[in-house]
Image (tube, rainbow, N blue to C red; front, side, top):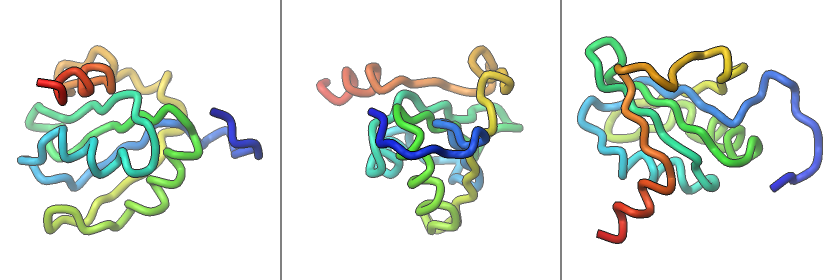
Length: 114
């Protein structure tokens, strides 16, 4: 869905979020970030060096920008979130990284029906 207007090329549909609780469930991330628009996928850090981080990929760039603006510094589970938009996710090779667990919106929708 294109809402018109132009954004700088560095704005992307993907957000990198850190300072998450190590115990946060992916369901809680979908609930929090899903308030700003449809999410394509969430990649949650699972290795020792990536715990407490996640990549949130939105369907629409404007939703990603709004989430970043509203949730950066937001107190979630007694921790202040630090979020930033990713300049170019294609240059950040995380798709096959073993330290991130990926769940797509489709997989999440299927899980919610169970």
